[in-house]
Length: 369
Image 1 (cartoon, rainbow, N blue to C red):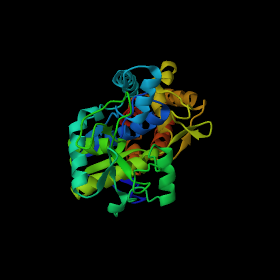
Image 2 (cartoon, helix red, strand yellow):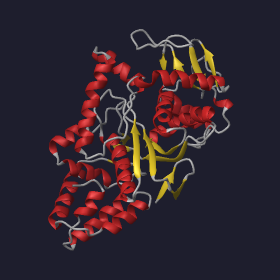
Image 3 (spheres, helix red, strand yellow):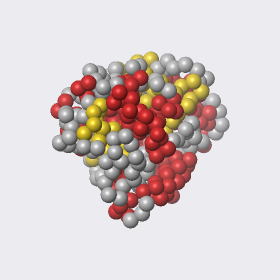
């Protein structure tokens, strides 16, 4: 199998052992899952299915970020407890992903379950000399880690711009460097708070995933990913803080999924240009929704429009009409082993179905019943 590795910036062999450890960044549960979320999780689901088809076991951890700025802000806006909001949205997310036929996560830990792990991890970062305390917070010092930038390869100016856009607060006067990032922070009034050696507060976003990944999967993960919007700052910071403590590579292979756009902009909750999965599922057959997503190569940005669902539904009907059979299975396997080329896999199934050959097994490898 060949997969694009973000850090190496090339399509390279992916050659894990019999048990494949995977960590995919999960939701911050403050609103419903949209098509952009679904594209990420369906991609890793197809990857797991092919790895299992090859004889591997997969252990995919998908965390839940149930303490973070967007969730806390939404809970304040609605006047509800942040964990009540999280519980409701997690149920909605789980229902949508189950309908899309995702394999169950091997583990789905919550950030709030890992506060002791996080506190211990921050202590180790401080002891290693890669972090400092200031004004009741703890910051990671990027100047202390000479491999900072190893995942994204972004220039400093782009990092500063993305940090400002994605909650990194480079203007924080307590930072030694605008790119330094928070490991522990004082809680604002009304926010959840835990005691720590550095004062009462709550964890930063990046430290949550490092602590969970290390706890669930060990010091080095075979494959880690999420959407391309997580390359920086989230995954860059995860790698730096993790390796500063363990001294070994955090991730063997970084895999990122391109953004889904609507009306010319990246689909995002902040912009409000969203197509919600649960709304689509009320109108369309769930396998057709999954098929509409798989029609796009995972690495490329693509655009959602109203023509996609009727086309996917018609395509699915043609496949079903072709009946049971193993046609196109080898072609689908070859396509998936070539950087998870789902559009080529779908084209092979189309061709077999057009010739009246049963394609049910090949479709099943893609999670399409």
